[in-house]
Amino acid sequence: MFTGMMLERTSFGWPLICAGALKLAYDFLLLAEFRASDADGRVDPI
Image 1 (cartoon, one colour):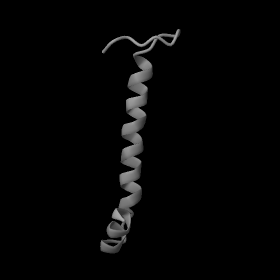
Image 2 (cartoon, helix red, strand yellow):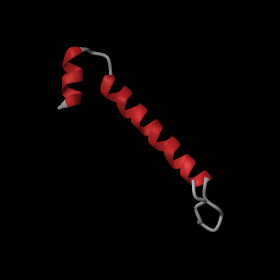
Image 3 (spheres, rainbow, N blue to C red):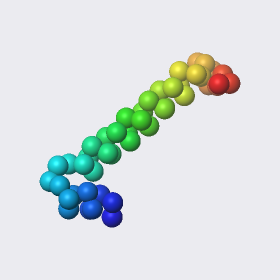
Image 4 (tube, rainbow, N blue to C red):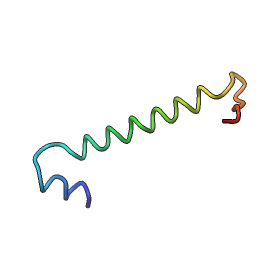
């Protein structure tokens, strides 16, 4: 519903921009989580 509302107001690809920004944030959070772990899979406390 929200993406349909964005598409109705403008022809610019706002849903794609928002989805890309969310995926980028998710990827950076995963990267930070994996950098905090050892090769054994243990996670250091943050």
